[in-house]
Amino acid sequence: MTESQTPFDHRPDARLGAALRETLGAPRDRAAFVARVMAGSARTPAHPVEHLLARWAVRGIVAAAAAAFIAGLVIGRGRTPVEPSVSDDPGAMIADVQAEPNLLLVASSGR
Amino acid sequence: MGTEPQRPSGDTRNPGDVGDAALVAQARGGDREAFGTLVDRYADQARRVARAVLQDPDDADDAAQDAFLAALVKLDQYDSARPFGPWLMRIVANAATDRRRRRKVRSAVSLDEGLVAGGARPDVLAEREVLLGRLRTALAELPERRRIAVVLFDVEGYSHAEIAQVLGIPEGTVRSEVFHARRKLRALLSDWRDDG
Image 1 (cartoon, each protein chain N blue to C red):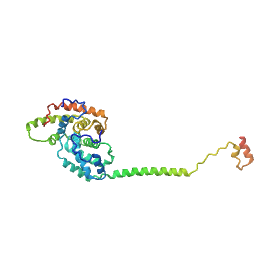
Image 2: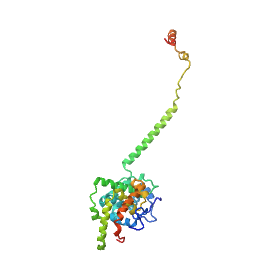
Image 3: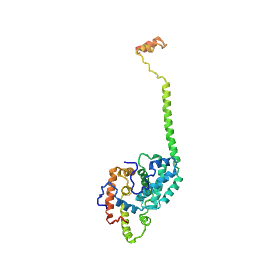
Image 4: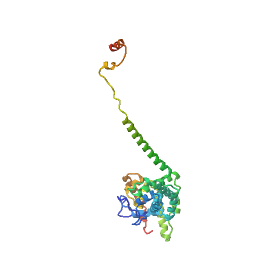
């Protein structure tokens, strides 16, 4: 162990690193490994079908949501709001009603 | 922190070489040669990290290969503003861990058979073999996360922050893991000779 270093040191320990590297084994056939990975990559599409479908699905959902929002806005603006009609005069409420006078009299007197 | 951290061992770059982010951009555009350069650049590092998890070199190489291919598929998810190494090593560590869970590591015996280089000077080698064997056993006895942390820190030269990113744990926990791993492993190194 390097005398000046303790386990608290924030610098890599070159001596321990070298020993561990040897323990793990220095991969010496890198070219063969790289060739093997590249052969595998030739069979691996960079953008597999699932990824493309997922991307399209997300785009489709976003587009549909945006279209629904815009349609809602357009339809909402095209409508004129119906204002509630409230009258303080009960007589005005029945002014247009064509009914028997007696019946109206009974109704208005609460009988 | 810069986007290209120092790599004392696994990095095979020359000063004039294209940066990782540029290679990733080319690879994203379908340039397999650029991807090949990235694989070549990180192959040793990825294999060592995988070996730290799996111990069996064949399993480790399979995991490292799976990780590179997974990285190729996920290249769109890589944030080029951040260093590529930790992002890739996270995929490697996950691939190795998944493989270990699936296969239940066969045995550390294959390490003895396949990893240690032969060479001249048998007198020195015999002593060194014993030491390597002890170190290997000690390394294998460490919890997996601790093993990965110490290998990334002392072998591959990653910072605590980068290892935290790789392992998905707080930086303080990484420091603690490295500390405990070092304390155990360094005790075995008193007889280690650097000249091999």
